[in-house]
Image 1 (tube, rainbow, N blue to C red):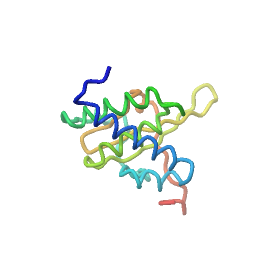
Image 2: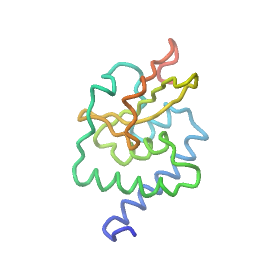
Image 3: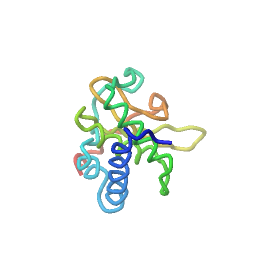
Image 4: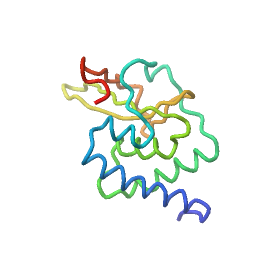
Length: 143
């Protein structure tokens, strides 16, 4: 059961999740990421292995808990991309960047999304270090 003091944060996360779901169907990923306040990183930056977990204050931790509660019950799936976008919006004052990475395992290419901050990364699955961040193709930056 959600403590009463966290209900506003959960309600806000729910509204953001609805907006993100619509945006993912109507807009490109870079535009959606910019709209929520977590722009898609277009190359550069440290590899995830070199970054630790982001240090969040009490307010940030409360917002992350709310996002986890909402996404755990999200009817369209708790994908890492949705989770990162919703968390990015809720933590936008910390200036997050959305990072999408890939890895090849057993001949299958897999993708993963997480957030990076100046203080580290936010990856609820804890697997970002196994992925290589995508680099933009020439001429596709900022689309």
